[in-house]
Length: 431
Ligand SMILES: *Cc1c(COP(=O)(O)O)cnc(C)c1O
Image 1 (cartoon, rainbow, N blue to C red):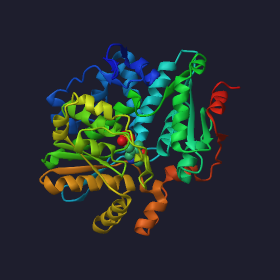
Image 2: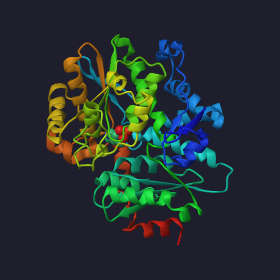
Image 3: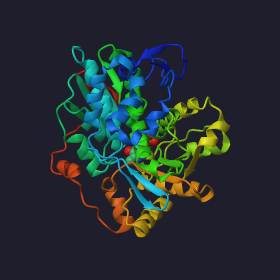
């Protein structure tokens, strides 16, 4: 299996090269040259398989021989060492909890998978890979945790000073070892601009191997398809067609869900639920893609005005707008609606959602209004405790702090302040 760039499709590279480079030389996103459906028997007896077996069957064709089967199984066993429960909260409405990992964000699985792949690829090599990543909050913690202690890989995280939550800042500044946090005097956009500048800096690239750990990287993007298979395994016995509602920002997670469907998993429909950053809901109405500057919301991990993975979704449907519309709906919701949903969910079912999950819930309910008679699953992408002030205000209760979070609460935060790109470059070059 090879991967081509969505910009040219001419040059194909193996999995290993796509992971190490992150993005193609022509700046296109890498995409698998084909998606071979899994045999019907896989879905017929999925409930007899362990999560690791499911994951191995699903990802093996993409990794091919770049990682030996035994090693790949070992990696999958390590990264899937927690639960992914489907919790029913109403008739025909359930949530898939993706927050039981080490940083309580759904990004844990992708970040850990990528870390283990890079770690494996750099074994026996004497050159080091530097992973450079900008975060608006959750990516940084998941990446820091996933890459902690991985030999041959150095991680540099840029985050906007004063604009991430206290818990999020602790998750990325207290680990040490091969992880360094740079505190940027600016916004998330400034962080991202500096990262982009680094990837285009030929002088810098002549001195070091640099890669990104955002969902553009296939090793972070593809493992997310496991979630949908794990949910299918649990919901299959309901005997109804399944609808997934995915709270979306960069659209990597939902795109991976569509890949699971291409693998043959029965799904009736996908709903991409967004906050007021409605570039995709607008596209689904008009057929015109108009990126915008992002607006800040209470579901901040989805504050994206130009979702990087949406080109992959369009490609999966050969850019056929009608075909896409048959399988995907997209709705946008305001902060006021999100807060109301948080409180409605809590009142009617006692369930404590987070703001991202609440947006997913709203998307599902909106779809089910006109399309009843299916089993709806919305994804809970983060633990509510990570958005403590919002949850406290909407519900008047303080969720208990779980042990994963408690662990970082009294460690010392360490970060290096920077303001301009030159400071980043000097740091990376060790000058
Ligand atoms: C990253 C993130 C999202 C958005 O996922 P995408 O794959 O970028 O669409 C949603 N919720 C939470 C909590 C996140 O951290």
